[in-house]
Amino acid sequence: MARSRPQNLYRRSDLERGVPRDSPRRHPAAGPGEPRPPASPPGDHTLHELTVLSRALFDTPDESEILRLAMDHIAVAGPYSAEAGYLEADGDLVASPRNRQNHAVTATVDRRVRELAGRDGPVTVRGRPWGRALGLRGHEKVHGYLVVTSRSRPTETEWSLLATLVRHTAAALSVAFAHRRRREDALELHRLREERADLQQQLVAVVAERAYQQAIHALMADIAASGGGEEAVTRALHGLTGLPALVEDRFGRLRSWAGPSRPDPYPEPDPARWDELLHTAAREAGPTRIKDRLITLIRPHGEILGMLALVDPQEEADEYTVLALEQAATSLALELAHLRNLAEVELRLHRELADDLLAGTDETSAYARAEAVGHDLHRSHYIVVVQWSDRPADDSFAQTVGRAASAVGMRSMLTRRSDHVVLVADDRPHARALYEALALETGTRSGTIGVSAPCASPDGIPQRYQEAQRALEVRRHSRKRYGMTFFDELGLYRILGPGNDYRELEAFVREWLGQLIDYDARHNSAMAETLARYFDCGGNYDETAASLAIHRSTLRYRLQRIRDISGNDLANVEDRLNLQVATRVWKIVLGGSC
Image: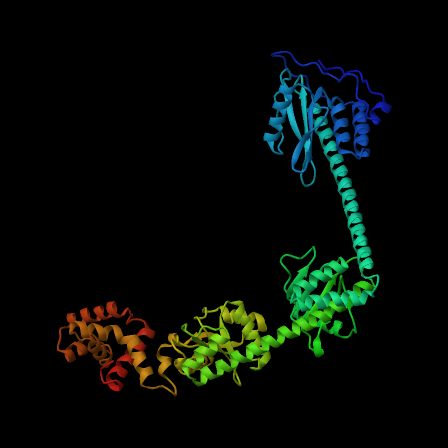
């Protein structure tokens, strides 16, 4: 039997004013064992009531009042009662004053709502067969909860109406929250502007007896005298103007920032756009506006050392702001010029020491000079030679190499020659890091790097310099001419070409035959001789065994022992070639001794 609609107790004016019913609408519940009545579509009057309630919710600017309206008129959607309501505030849920006053029930519902942590879920209330905590969800968060109970399980239609009411309530809360945030933001902006106006009034009071320009000049002079540097200048400029202040170096990289809204991470400069910006700013006599920034170049004696800027998206800067920016740029120009001079002196001292080390210098003097410039020459060093096919080895390229070496953590002294740059590094470079960093810096991969063997003392650096050049030349004339090559990985190529002496030949033999020679000395055996005879016979087992007057199986055993002792594989073409050359040098050049 279809249920009849309960009599509507609302008057339209009451609902629009948010006046609750005298008593909520109730649907009779099915008795035990009786089937639920079939769902029936909502009547026009119910839909009208929901429409009027929705309008009232959206017309209400206060979140607490929105929640109250929803709780008072929950019966519009069906046989429901609003047991409790909650609003989110600063990460917590605040109970509505209209929640039921039964302490035990309130505590149970409150605990359950907090356990749900933003999810919908059932709620148990004594005397109510059905209960549900429904989240009032906005676009980004849950604005609160509505705890609804019923004396009977809702039909599908009643549940749909309740869900609609909850959605409209949540949407109204979202609108109210958004309006409140805008009001708060407007109040905060107004407060900041008033604060800035107060600060400007204070500044006017301070400099009342003197011109504003003299006051700023005095402030910047004090900062320069105290050695505050770039950070102090940008902080002072931010304090004077109320705008974020920043300094970038001549390549567009951030050096200092004072004020809010600093990008994190700070964007890497685009060389093409940076050059265009510099050209634009250089054409102006004073500060110039580019997009949301008011910028001025730091260029003592015409050389650009960096850029000072104020971030001013609202274009609030006035003549006093421009004056403060100009005075700060003047102060920074002196500071950066001083730092530049110090860096040039330090670089010159490093280059002079590096030049003397490459040419050969007194060891005691070298240690003392290295200590004076802050370089530990007592460590094992490597000589690194860098050449880029499309870049001349001038000061600009040397600086590029220096930046790349610093970026990959290399501690080094730098100098240059007519066609390459030289680094005296205190550690073995990573196999590819320096090359990749330089490829990134230069924008091209057409470069070659040669690295020497380690050098334990300054007097060995000239020879290691030749090794680095040899490694570079071998790489340049190989099939893959671009990249990094280490001298101690050249193998046979180490002894090819001019400039080799007895020590280099001996080092090559020791590298490839040293373990066999030492084994023979300890065990009175002939492993090195067996290997040499094996190569002399072209790898023929029978001829080799006959020349050594041993059985073929004995030769096979010795060759296996040679593999085990030396760690080299006779089947590997590269190992076989180096071993054969080493045995020839050992017998012919070194006379069978090493």
